[in-house]
Image (cartoon, rainbow, N blue to C red; front, side, top):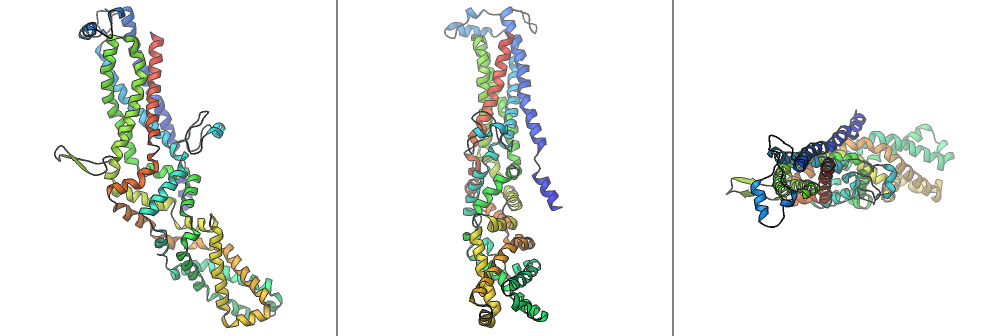
Length: 500
């Protein structure tokens, strides 16, 4: 059913969280492997033990200097450590690069709420971290702010709200609403007549009462058409689209996470996999530097581990994000043999289709739009719009009989009757409107409008629609990767020195 599918859609992806937690330990395991290898190396240097078939000879630290010709002699002589211990460094760096990217992405989306909850009071507003510790996913923490930015960009480049509501045909809207609205109006007219003119109403024959109600109901479609026409002309006065989107995103953070994950699924895979590729390349550099330092001054080789861990984690995330959004325009390289363009921009068509579909499913649909108008920040203005059309409906319905009704009921009673009808219709509207959502979703054409507009944007404008939503927080993702890499390096450092 619809409710079951909605529940499934909003169910938190616990498997992703577990996999993210598991990946957090992967760098530590690889750190232990490297630490044991380097620890064995340290013992060999200090004790002159035979290792991997070596002769057990180890140069004294007193024979080494960071300056002078003895450096060249030491480098020419090489290290007593077996080459396998150096060769393993790029592979470990690749694992660290991959793992830190995976964990950094998990920390971008999870947890949905600040954890631990007991420390939430120390969380700065709109920030993922707590001053006393704790963490909330970057996107859930900034869901409201990101939603406001996205809404501004969407309404300025993709969607005209007034034009969108202008696609609703007043007569068809009235027909869609009639099954629920007609009985409600029938009940309202009878209730108000009995309340404001009980003697007059009860004194009428039943067939006369029925005729009067039927006459009033004949104008119901015209009344509903007038309401929608008035709404189309004053939509910005009764609908705060930004407030609606922000409120929905803050209340349903799992939907925001889902939109980012599904729209950027391919790009997130690139970030994860590129961590391994670039981690390996940076590991080659680390291997060379580590070899030189290990030969010239072994005491400095330990502190290099957290430094290179931070550099590896930081640069792999930075490079991965650059590959996603740069270059903006297709750029030929090697005399046109290859064409480079940001991975996200190359998928403009696919991204446009996915984004526009999720946008309607989760946010900009008839249900949410009407909920905002009827219960949101501008609900009083919307209520007044309905009431003024109801007053007009009452006057028009009575027509030539209005003077007689005023004379029989009295001006005050007639005025109260008109106001009560309007007030009750405003209260009944939320119960009746849902039956028209299916028609409105088709008529509004939000998905098609946004999709066509996004596909038609030039690359720089397309990048400017979605990238700014989280651009200012990219540095957090990059630094998280660096910090995780540094933690791995610290673990290596401690294990190395505890074993020496």
